[in-house]
Image (cartoon, rainbow, N blue to C red; front, top):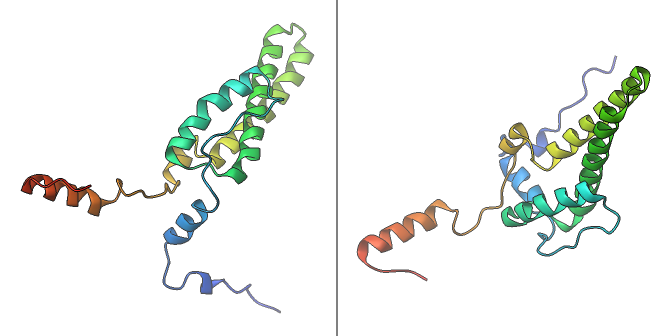
Amino acid sequence: MRGRKPKPTHMLEGNYSRAELARRQSLDGDAVVECDPPVKLHASALALWRRILPQFQKVGSVRQSDLLALCITCQTFDESQRAYLEIQKSSDPEAREILFRRWLKLSDAFRRWAVEFGMTPSSRVRLVAPETQADSLEAILDRAEADAKGKFPN
């Protein structure tokens, strides 16, 4: 008998919470500053792209390597919306059942992609936002101390 598979404890030494590992992984690559939407997106996918990309850019959570996954997320959303409209138009119960199953699969796929980007409340809790100078506690305390003394740092 071989026994249990060994645990990779070498990855956890000195960092049992893995918070720093998550921070480093979230900062890989360059943040997207300006990006045109893909040409072949349908109307609702394009609307979603234009709505969420500026929010991601403001936070700095989307990298250049994430744009393909974001495009797939928007396309899945569009397909889910079109499947829902087809269900409403259909009057045949058997066709509605088939369309409903398709809509459920697409909705679940969109939910999974949304979780990847932190677009759900539960996944937003697990996000690690890049720390900026203004967000650090030390910078806030330094500014407050300088304001109290009447000095204003640059």
